[in-house]
Length: 216
Image: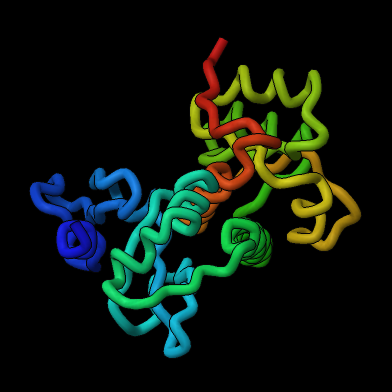
Protein backbone atom coordinates (compact mmCIF):
# COMPACT_ATOMS: atom_id res chain seq x y z
CA UNK A 1 0.00 0.00 0.00
CA UNK A 2 2.74 2.44 0.95
CA UNK A 3 4.69 1.87 -2.26
CA UNK A 4 1.59 2.27 -4.40
CA UNK A 5 0.62 5.59 -2.86
CA UNK A 6 4.18 6.87 -2.92
CA UNK A 7 4.60 6.05 -6.59
CA UNK A 8 1.52 8.11 -7.35
CA UNK A 9 2.81 11.02 -5.29
CA UNK A 10 6.06 11.89 -6.99
CA UNK A 11 6.88 14.83 -9.23
CA UNK A 12 6.88 12.48 -12.21
CA UNK A 13 4.28 13.52 -14.82
CA UNK A 14 1.06 11.54 -14.81
CA UNK A 15 0.71 9.02 -17.57
CA UNK A 16 -1.31 9.83 -20.69
CA UNK A 17 -1.57 13.56 -19.97
CA UNK A 18 -2.92 15.54 -22.94
CA UNK A 19 -0.21 16.98 -25.15
CA UNK A 20 1.03 20.30 -23.78
CA UNK A 21 -0.69 19.81 -20.39
CA UNK A 22 1.43 19.05 -17.33
CA UNK A 23 -0.46 16.75 -14.98
CA UNK A 24 0.24 15.33 -11.54
CA UNK A 25 -1.62 12.82 -9.39
CA UNK A 26 -3.31 13.86 -6.15
CA UNK A 27 -2.18 11.64 -3.28
CA UNK A 28 -5.67 11.76 -1.75
CA UNK A 29 -8.00 11.12 -4.69
CA UNK A 30 -5.38 9.21 -6.73
CA UNK A 31 -6.68 11.09 -9.79
CA UNK A 32 -4.50 12.92 -12.29
CA UNK A 33 -5.20 16.57 -13.01
CA UNK A 34 -3.40 19.61 -14.47
CA UNK A 35 -0.82 20.79 -11.96
CA UNK A 36 -2.38 24.27 -12.08
CA UNK A 37 -5.20 22.89 -9.94
CA UNK A 38 -3.03 21.23 -7.32
CA UNK A 39 -0.67 22.24 -4.52
CA UNK A 40 2.86 20.85 -4.32
CA UNK A 41 4.37 19.88 -0.96
CA UNK A 42 7.94 19.06 0.01
CA UNK A 43 9.39 17.54 3.15
CA UNK A 44 11.65 19.75 5.22
CA UNK A 45 14.85 18.49 6.92
CA UNK A 46 12.97 18.31 10.22
CA UNK A 47 10.13 16.25 8.74
CA UNK A 48 7.75 19.20 8.43
CA UNK A 49 5.40 19.21 5.43
CA UNK A 50 5.91 22.48 3.56
CA UNK A 51 3.52 23.82 0.89
CA UNK A 52 5.43 24.89 -2.22
CA UNK A 53 2.95 27.14 -4.00
CA UNK A 54 5.55 28.51 -6.41
CA UNK A 55 6.78 24.97 -7.17
CA UNK A 56 10.42 26.00 -6.77
CA UNK A 57 11.56 24.30 -3.56
CA UNK A 58 14.13 21.53 -3.97
CA UNK A 59 13.44 17.94 -3.14
CA UNK A 60 10.88 15.34 -4.04
CA UNK A 61 7.40 16.77 -4.13
CA UNK A 62 3.93 15.34 -3.65
CA UNK A 63 0.69 16.87 -4.88
CA UNK A 64 -2.78 17.43 -3.42
CA UNK A 65 -5.81 18.93 -5.14
CA UNK A 66 -6.27 22.59 -4.26
CA UNK A 67 -9.19 22.06 -1.89
CA UNK A 68 -9.30 22.52 1.85
CA UNK A 69 -10.97 19.17 2.50
CA UNK A 70 -8.34 17.26 0.49
CA UNK A 71 -5.45 18.87 2.37
CA UNK A 72 -7.19 18.19 5.68
CA UNK A 73 -7.71 14.56 4.67
CA UNK A 74 -4.04 14.18 3.74
CA UNK A 75 -3.08 15.60 7.15
CA UNK A 76 -5.55 13.73 9.32
CA UNK A 77 -5.10 10.33 7.66
CA UNK A 78 -1.29 10.45 7.57
CA UNK A 79 -1.28 10.30 3.77
CA UNK A 80 1.71 12.66 3.57
CA UNK A 81 3.89 10.16 5.42
CA UNK A 82 2.82 7.33 3.10
CA UNK A 83 3.48 9.46 0.02
CA UNK A 84 6.91 10.64 1.18
CA UNK A 85 7.77 7.18 2.55
CA UNK A 86 9.14 8.95 5.60
CA UNK A 87 7.89 10.47 8.86
CA UNK A 88 6.01 13.64 7.96
CA UNK A 89 4.54 16.26 10.27
CA UNK A 90 2.02 18.56 8.58
CA UNK A 91 1.07 21.51 10.80
CA UNK A 92 -2.41 21.29 12.29
CA UNK A 93 -3.32 24.56 10.55
CA UNK A 94 -1.71 23.72 7.21
CA UNK A 95 -4.90 24.44 5.23
CA UNK A 96 -5.24 27.84 6.88
CA UNK A 97 -1.62 28.63 6.07
CA UNK A 98 -2.14 27.69 2.44
CA UNK A 99 -5.22 29.90 2.21
CA UNK A 100 -3.27 32.87 3.58
CA UNK A 101 -0.36 32.25 1.22
CA UNK A 102 -2.64 31.96 -1.80
CA UNK A 103 -4.47 35.16 -0.85
CA UNK A 104 -1.12 36.94 -0.55
CA UNK A 105 -0.09 35.66 -3.98
CA UNK A 106 -3.34 36.96 -5.47
CA UNK A 107 -2.90 40.36 -3.85
CA UNK A 108 0.68 40.55 -5.13
CA UNK A 109 -0.36 39.67 -8.68
CA UNK A 110 -3.05 42.35 -8.66
CA UNK A 111 -0.41 44.81 -7.52
CA UNK A 112 1.87 43.78 -10.38
CA UNK A 113 -1.02 44.19 -12.82
CA UNK A 114 -1.72 47.69 -11.48
CA UNK A 115 1.89 48.73 -12.00
CA UNK A 116 1.80 47.25 -15.51
CA UNK A 117 -1.38 49.22 -16.31
CA UNK A 118 -3.36 46.01 -16.75
CA UNK A 119 -6.11 46.85 -14.24
CA UNK A 120 -9.48 48.56 -14.60
CA UNK A 121 -11.14 49.54 -11.33
CA UNK A 122 -14.71 50.45 -10.47
CA UNK A 123 -18.11 49.65 -11.95
CA UNK A 124 -17.97 52.15 -14.81
CA UNK A 125 -14.43 51.31 -15.96
CA UNK A 126 -15.12 47.61 -15.76
CA UNK A 127 -18.39 47.95 -17.65
CA UNK A 128 -16.63 49.94 -20.37
CA UNK A 129 -13.86 47.37 -20.65
CA UNK A 130 -16.40 44.57 -20.97
CA UNK A 131 -18.23 46.44 -23.70
CA UNK A 132 -14.98 47.08 -25.58
CA UNK A 133 -13.84 43.46 -25.25
CA UNK A 134 -10.82 44.51 -23.18
CA UNK A 135 -11.57 42.50 -20.03
CA UNK A 136 -10.09 39.02 -19.71
CA UNK A 137 -10.86 38.45 -16.03
CA UNK A 138 -13.53 39.93 -13.77
CA UNK A 139 -13.26 40.20 -9.98
CA UNK A 140 -15.89 41.22 -7.45
CA UNK A 141 -15.40 41.58 -3.71
CA UNK A 142 -16.70 38.47 -1.97
CA UNK A 143 -18.22 40.55 0.83
CA UNK A 144 -19.77 43.29 -1.31
CA UNK A 145 -21.61 41.60 -4.14
CA UNK A 146 -24.91 43.20 -5.11
CA UNK A 147 -26.91 44.44 -8.06
CA UNK A 148 -23.90 45.98 -9.81
CA UNK A 149 -21.98 42.71 -9.54
CA UNK A 150 -24.88 40.80 -11.05
CA UNK A 151 -25.14 43.32 -13.89
CA UNK A 152 -21.43 43.11 -14.71
CA UNK A 153 -21.49 39.32 -14.51
CA UNK A 154 -24.41 39.21 -16.94
CA UNK A 155 -22.48 41.35 -19.44
CA UNK A 156 -19.26 39.38 -19.16
CA UNK A 157 -18.56 36.21 -21.13
CA UNK A 158 -15.35 35.20 -19.39
CA UNK A 159 -14.23 33.88 -16.04
CA UNK A 160 -15.39 35.74 -12.95
CA UNK A 161 -14.30 35.39 -9.33
CA UNK A 162 -15.74 36.56 -6.02
CA UNK A 163 -13.06 35.15 -3.73
CA UNK A 164 -11.11 38.10 -2.32
CA UNK A 165 -12.67 40.60 0.08
CA UNK A 166 -12.99 44.31 -0.64
CA UNK A 167 -10.22 44.95 1.90
CA UNK A 168 -7.89 42.51 0.12
CA UNK A 169 -8.65 44.04 -3.27
CA UNK A 170 -8.10 47.49 -1.82
CA UNK A 171 -4.79 46.47 -0.26
CA UNK A 172 -3.59 45.24 -3.65
CA UNK A 173 -4.36 48.61 -5.20
CA UNK A 174 -3.41 50.87 -2.31
CA UNK A 175 -7.01 51.89 -1.67
CA UNK A 176 -9.33 51.58 1.30
CA UNK A 177 -11.67 49.14 -0.39
CA UNK A 178 -12.48 47.95 -3.90
CA UNK A 179 -15.57 46.10 -5.11
CA UNK A 180 -15.10 45.66 -8.86
CA UNK A 181 -12.04 45.27 -11.04
CA UNK A 182 -11.04 43.65 -14.29
CA UNK A 183 -7.74 42.61 -15.84
CA UNK A 184 -6.75 43.07 -19.44
CA UNK A 185 -5.72 40.00 -21.45
CA UNK A 186 -2.20 38.74 -20.83
CA UNK A 187 -0.02 36.53 -18.67
CA UNK A 188 -0.83 38.41 -15.48
CA UNK A 189 -4.53 37.71 -15.96
CA UNK A 190 -3.76 34.04 -16.63
CA UNK A 191 -1.53 33.76 -13.54
CA UNK A 192 -4.08 35.50 -11.33
CA UNK A 193 -6.89 33.27 -12.58
CA UNK A 194 -4.87 30.20 -11.62
CA UNK A 195 -4.22 31.46 -8.10
CA UNK A 196 -7.84 32.54 -7.63
CA UNK A 197 -9.04 29.08 -8.67
CA UNK A 198 -6.76 27.51 -6.07
CA UNK A 199 -7.79 30.02 -3.41
CA UNK A 200 -11.46 29.33 -4.13
CA UNK A 201 -10.84 25.73 -3.12
CA UNK A 202 -9.83 26.91 0.35
CA UNK A 203 -12.63 29.44 0.72
CA UNK A 204 -15.43 27.35 -0.74
CA UNK A 205 -17.49 27.52 2.46
CA UNK A 206 -17.50 31.30 2.55
CA UNK A 207 -17.04 32.36 -1.07
CA UNK A 208 -18.71 31.34 -4.31
CA UNK A 209 -16.65 29.32 -6.72
CA UNK A 210 -15.57 30.89 -10.01
CA UNK A 211 -18.50 31.22 -12.36
CA UNK A 212 -18.98 31.88 -16.02
CA UNK A 213 -20.70 35.05 -17.12
CA UNK A 214 -23.40 34.99 -19.79
CA UNK A 215 -23.98 37.68 -22.33
CA UNK A 216 -27.43 39.12 -22.66
